[in-house]
Image 1 (cartoon, protein in one colour):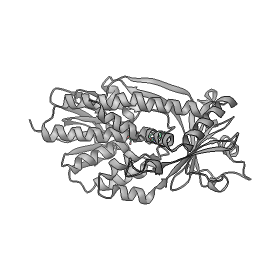
Image 2 (tube, rainbow, N blue to C red; image 1 turned 135 degrees about the vertical axis):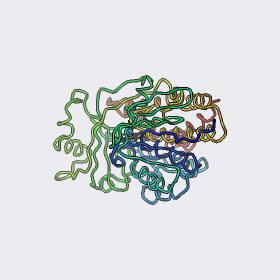
Image 3 (tube, rainbow, N blue to C red; image 1 turned 90 degrees about the horizontal axis):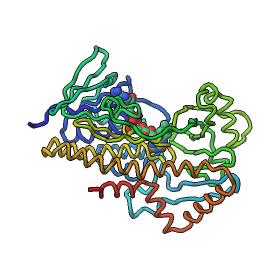
Image 4 (cartoon, rainbow, N blue to C red; image 1 turned 90 degrees about the vertical axis):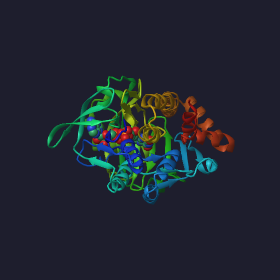
Length: 404
Ligand SMILES: Cc1cc2nc3c(=O)[nH]c(=O)nc-3n(C[C@H](O)[C@H](O)[C@H](O)COP(=O)(O)OP(=O)(O)OC[C@H]3O[C@@H](n4cnc5c(N)ncnc54)[C@H](O)[C@@H]3O)c2cc1C
């Protein structure tokens, strides 16, 4: 039977938005349901890696032009050791032969969802509804009855497929009975933004810096608006949000990074639990997951949103084949699971766990070995290129597509 009813997508974060646009552009009707009243604006992903930029560029309709116009292009990024003042600088020009976008784009993820949101308004095949929360579903051999809480009350929408792009606490995943295996770190991460010009006090400061320190590591990133600093907090304080988000605590952290005269102006501040989890399966029947709904990791390396976008584009091609060409959805979803889930476990989880370990070691010997390794890798163009292909997620996208 031909599929004509809209595919329901729960959640208009980066994964859901990109998926909806890709399908709508190909004339496949989508119903994108977002529980919030507007697109969420919060301090989350800010790094776009080259493969994500390529996929977003292929959407056309000015998406990449607007991203590039708004974001900061980062050609180099650095690993700094505050004890020795050594800096390993990785130059992304070394991978210029491997990608159309040999740089990291620093841009808030909410800018992407806003750009796609504007484009979606022009598409007759996309129906985007805010204040529409997916609360559950039941499925049979032919389709899914999706329960939706909307301002007018509860409704049920019949759909050929339901895609859960509804983030880490995914209702779709939970209701499908899919386990989210993994662990939560004991400590929370604190992210703050400030207009203070760190580039004027740290020599030759790149827009992306991983800073090792005997007492407290941090990540210092620039977006088009401000500097943003990410700090780990102490596990014993994990439940004391009032302390960790207080002016005094934040000022102390920033002053440890750079002890300037007077208080820092603070923009956003947010505190969040850090998890390493991958869903036991990415699909069950006519339910399929993408993005944080099926994998989450610590933000060191900037792989969460990027991995979610890679899921969305992989899944989008499959949904086109299913709807347009009559491909078997069970086979397509099983292949999606093999390509994307194995990779999330093997690549993203391994890398992000290793990145965190690399940053948090505090003894001098381990710090020295880490910085020596980074210095030697950055100084050798062959090794630096291999390092960048891995960290820029180019290898992982290639590897995933090779999985039969
Ligand atoms: C501080 C921080 C920094 C980060 N930095 C990076 C980085 O630099 N690079 C990177 O790649 N990743 C980073 N990440 C991870 C990144 O933010 C996430 O991986 C990304 O947001 C996942 O996108 P998503 O579309 O899967 O889910 P989300 O962005 O969480 O979007 C889910 C959407 O679904 C909606 N929703 C939820 N439940 C329902 C429901 N039942 N019905 C309807 N709608 C629903 C939500 O309101 C939301 O809009 C960072 C995360 C944090 C917390």
